[in-house]
Length: 454
Image 1 (tube, rainbow, N blue to C red):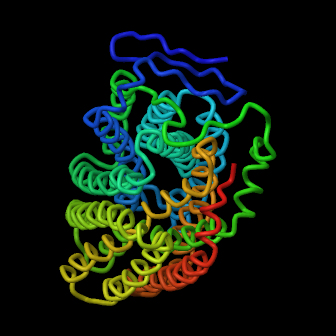
Image 2: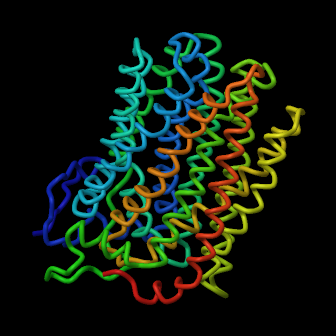
Image 3: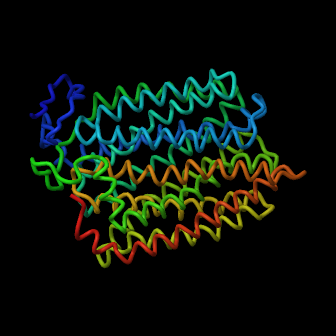
């Protein structure tokens, strides 16, 4: 059974039926994505959605010292809200949503998810205790779970393989636009009007963005740059079969674990950096938001786009550069991170943070593009969900919570000292293990890319 979207202005309508035969979605104007201008416009829209994703997520990070002061939360509780409890729902809900996206209109899945996480962000501003705040953050996680898997599936149908890492790097730069906007807006709104107003003011515009996405973006034809699945069932048609197939793919297994450990270091440091600067250098929340926003945004955007373009060129000589590049930039960034967390000079720390963020962000597009190169087009959203399950349960789930717990355990008379040592521990452990696992993946990468999961 084919699904034919009915036009209404620029919209292709809402279609949520499941197509069990996995036949392709029929697009209103199949030639639309053959036009570079429209293709790039859609990529820009998807990047802005990702910006809202991290804008809402980082808002808690920049405001957590204000929340802690008013609500009396411990570092462990703060780590739970931005880490483990958030990550568990984020990764668990991402799996069924990804299966839905592989069988239905991906544009609509993204739009509904955006509206949900934006409304739940606004509700965070109304929380009166830890349980209410935790439930609101869990609602944000459920919404955000539906963002990236269907988006990356769309991008792989919009851009061919030789341009995919660059396109994904542009999309991924939304992370750092969101971090920048979240830090700056959150810092200034929080200082001027309070953290509750900041959550409401930042959350509600996402609902408008969801409406614009429905009006301006069309669902692309599936499998434009991949082979459509055969009509008969395969051993990997069930999600359990997909997971087993991916886990039996040695390269995917090592890359997913490496990404998880890299994210453990990243979230363990990044989610606590505002609190560390406030406690160590005694500066205001607005100043922290501005400086960290500029450092994270500038370094992250340059690193992400540069990393995507670099791997698209390097892989032409050897496809193992997908993981060699990831290992190299993580190792290099560790040197800068060590100086950042040990220097007593604020502006030196902030300047090096730009470089460290740029290097660390460079591995993300390579891993995303590689994961799509290990499977057939039929499983792109699901491979993203499985990849993000591993990365986020280790990184987002355990990184902030571990640092918060260690900070409470190592508490000293100096406000920032225990947090400094907790963050350093996360970076050394997570980053070192990530480098080893990426290099281990290089041994099987070529074989596994030549024998994709289908």
